[in-house]
Amino acid sequence: MSVKFGISPIAWQNDDLPDLTAAFSMEQCLREARDIGYTGIERGRRMPADTEGLKAYLRKYDIALCGGWCSGNLHVASVKDEIAAITQQVDQFIALDAPCLVYAECSNTVQGMANTPVNDRPKLGRDAVLAYARKLSEVAQWMQDRGMQMAYHHHMGSMIESEDDVNWLMEGSSDAVKLCFDTGHLLFGGGDVMATMVRWAHRIHHVHFKDIRPDVVRDVRAHDRSFLDAVIAGAFTVPGDGCIDFQAVTDKLKAMDYAGWIVVEAEQDPAKAPPYAYSQKGYRHILDVCAQAGLAVDH
Image (cartoon, rainbow, N blue to C red; front, side, top):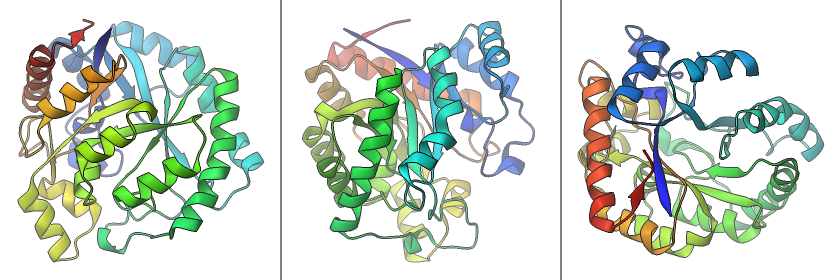
């Protein structure tokens, strides 16, 4: 069993804060990511939209599509309408042999609102999350039947952010709903990284290795700053540059026979954290913890 290393283009091309990364191109991102050693990239909005164009684009840089974000609206839409809305992306990911679709509910999220504190994110009770999870199971089963896996991304500013939210979502959904386990978002959301990982190991299909700077997170919480403020201030960083024990996380991946993608996703201000240097630092740290854990890497 072996893992693969992928990266999100967000350090070079931030879709939520395009001005922040205006000096960088998607082409530079793919070229530098591959030069560092990453073999996969998650989908970015500035990549070609059509399937054949995207396939040729990725082939040019010798890099695989290792997943990608899908903005869900299932909380306010019917299952039928949501399926219709995401069919094109699902079909594209199937054609490009992606390991999963990284799905997150965005109908009521505050993550992209510059003037809304992340503390003011939508909060649902257990019964409401369980009801949502039942609808989500129908969409995930439809995806699975077509040949694509849903990996749900718990995310800051969204209605599935905290450890309780994740627990309720997993409890209320079928096994067709897998988890995109994001270390940084879970800790920022106040969750216990290892406890959540142990509890839902059998549902983890995709992993985001994201670190946080706890002093920045505390300031964001204390002063009611937005999620975008948090990104600019440096709440997130690459593995090995913050406070998360990635050795413990990787040891658990080894124990659960994880054989999927480990993806670095660390949006920062490139003026403070040059994308190449930081992405390389994250890569080297993951390589080291995998070696220590005895987790083989597919280069």
